[in-house]
Image 1 (spheres, rainbow, N blue to C red):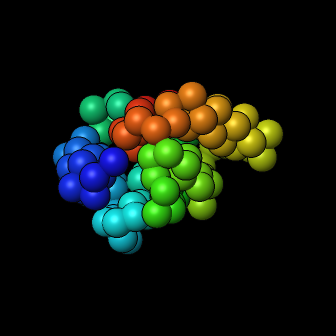
Image 2 (image 1 turned 60 degrees about the vertical axis):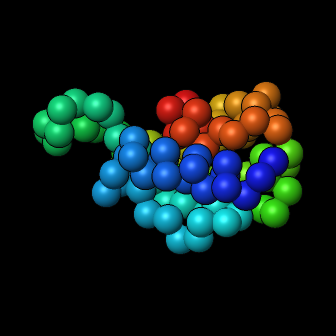
Length: 106
């Protein structure tokens, strides 16, 4: 897969998440994405949130990115593990496809 396609994907994540997406490296992608419920910015209804770190290697997307939660609110350890497992499973399912936005949506 061409590097420019991956760069377009990084732009797409930024477009979807705006200020909630911090790009540490564009290629291979390394992002921090602040995920929270879409409650039209009514923060009193945002009981759960997490910052995902998504770090892809040079083989991305043929090799799924490394995904972890680096910060969270309202998620106990068991829920965090469940969430990460679900995202990693999705990454394996989407292997060889561009998947950054899809993983954030999970």
